[in-house]
Structure formats: structure tokens, C-alpha cells
Length: 272
Image (cartoon, rainbow, N blue to C red):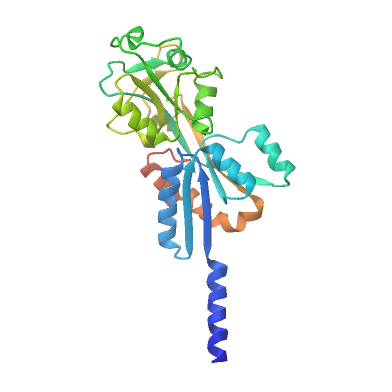
């Protein structure tokens, strides 16, 4: 009887040692990719249990600070004040770029406007242009959709497309990328922006120009890969040094050829 108890204890201890329970939280842009990677990883690592949730990059970074996530998924890099806060708490961290993404500007499929310059997008989102007829479209009020302020995509779009100008006060801030897709698909005068992996037939992506209308490029994996599409960005994982041994097997899988193949399959841009 004693031998049985000892053997059982040893087996439970071994299972506990090799069990890999991870929490990953943050960017809605990165969410579909991480879910796909986690599902595949758990198929070949039976002792792994990975819980993946969204909420926005800011939410994920806050969870990193308060210790409620093992990995933060983010569609922007950490801000200086976030880095300082972690440093003040004595929390050293690692940053890993896991993939790249193209940010698509979307409208309702019935909208005749099929291309916009960066300046026109800026004027729409800052409230200078309010009707599609000003852009050669129908006489229709523009309904502006944006991610909420905790989103890394919100921050990236403001910095790289609006050149740090403020969003118009009447912009409708949505809690998730999927909500933008749904809202734009149901609103004829709508405009929004989403990660490439979220593009669906229910919405239309427009070509964009960052050279004042000389060339217009549609969002695509190929365009993001060869840098011809101008609104591209890296996607990140952040984790504390104290959990490196636990998280590194999963991150190594994401960076492996098999993991990067899933990046492409899911609609993102692989590192190579």
C-alpha cells in the first residue's frame, strides 16, 4: 500500500512539473493568431493548457504589470511610461516580435469610394471631411468607427495615419475589432480600420496612398511583406523574465517554421 502511495505521489509530482498552464491576454488584433497557435501547440503538448483572451493591448500590458497574465499580446510597442512602471516595480521583461500585420481601412461594400490618401483618411477621422460626396462618393454622412483608447491599434492608427492628431469627438469607439467589422457591414456610410486577418466579404477594404495620391495600394499579405503597403506594423509578445522558462517553449513554437506557417495561414505576415 505504501509503495502504491509513493508511486502515485511521484506521478502527480512529475505531471505537475511538466504541466504548462499559461495565460495570454491583450490585443484583439493578435487574438486570432494566438488562439490558432495555442490550439496547435496543445495538440502536440498534452500537458499544456493555454487560455487566450483579448481586451486590447493596454489591457494586456496592465495585466503584465499586475501579474495576472504570463504573456501580453500587443499590436504596439510598450510606451515609455509603461516601461518605467515595470522598472520601478523591479520587473525585467522581454519583447518578442512574432509576426507583422497590415492595417486595412474598410467601408460598406456598397460604397463607391475605393481609394483614399492618407490625408483624406486623416481629414475623415479628425472631422474635416464629413460626407462621402466630398470624396467622389454618394451624398451620405460618414459614420466614423474606431477602436477604443485601450487598443494598440487605436494608438498605432493615430500615430502613423493621423500623424498624432486627435480623433474627432463623435467617432464611435468600439470595444473589439469584430465589433468594427460588424458595424461597418451594417452601416452604408461607415468607415473603420481592422487588422488584415479580420477582413471579410461583408466589408470592403480601400486602397490607400501615402505619397499624396501617386500610388494606391490594397492591403494584402504580399504588400505588407514587400513593404509596398504603407500601413504595416509588428505584433509583439511581452513577458517577465521570471516566467521565461514556462513561456519559452510556446514562444519558440510560434517562431518556428511550423508556427510561422500558421501566421501565414491565419492571415498575418510571417517574419521571413
